[in-house]
Structures are given as C-alpha cells and as structure tokens.
Length: 189
Image (cartoon, rainbow, N blue to C red; front, top):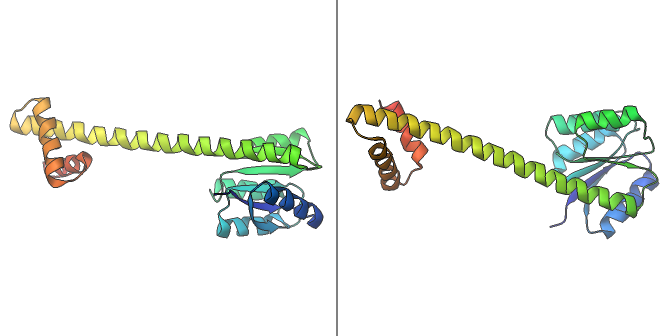
C-alpha cells in the first residue's frame, strides 16, 4: 500500500512539481494545501502518513501548523520544505519533532530520500511506542496477578505456586485472561 501524503505549499507550481515527483515515485498525494490552516484541516480529515510542509505560508505558517499537527497527534510525520535554512528555523523544527528538513529547490534527488528516511523513522518510533505500551500493560497485568496470588495464599493458606495454578486454571476454565481473573479475585476479597 502506498503512503498517503499531504503537500502544504503556497506556490502552485512548486506544489504541482512536488506532487508529480511523489506520484511518479509511487506515493499517493491525497491533498494539497496553500496555507497552514488548510493543511491542518485537510490532515484532520485525510489522516496522511506524511505531510510536506513549507514554512512561509499565509494565514498559519508551516512551523505553527506542524506544531498543531504533531501536538494534537493528527499526524506523526512532518517533513519541512523551505528556502530558509537559518539556525532559528532549524532549531524550532527540531523542538517541534519534525522528521526531515529539505531546502529548496526541491528535486527528486533531495526529496525522495528525505521522505523515505522520515517514514522509516516514524514507523520505528511508532513501533517503539507500541512496544512500550504493551510492556506497561504486561507489567500492570503481572502486578494484578501477584496481588491476587497474595490474596489466595493468605485466604487458602496455600503456596505461591498453588495460587498461580489456581488463577491459571480459572483463566482456562472461564476462557478469560489471567489479569481479568486476578481483578475479580482482588475485587471479591
């Protein structure tokens, strides 16, 4: 499945050139905006995989629009396209969480590698976030099971292993996750 991209660029010819480069490379250009405000609204509806954002645009500049997109988690991957490479812009882009910074003039040699790397980094970061969330959930479940084992050990004067086996057997009999059985034991103590 090709990646969905929104282009936010106030120059119509540049916007069309970028769209052509991306389409020929197999990307799906799902939207084009001429200012930051429209880009934000478009992204809310289209949920692109990546946004290419110019900095200097009317109504809402690209850095402010990018901040909104990233802070509100509308998108997670933004690459800046700009004629400006001042330290101030670069530092602001870094602080916002921009995934790439391409200085104009844009051509396929400088644009496509930046997009590929940004998408790969975004996927890697999302995978790590999911792994962290799963680890947190697993830890939470283990804590519940430990607490439930303690309750069973105290109530039934049984060993830790016997308490664990009891929870596991209930889990299999009820076809419910062990953490749910543990919650029920804790609530019913």
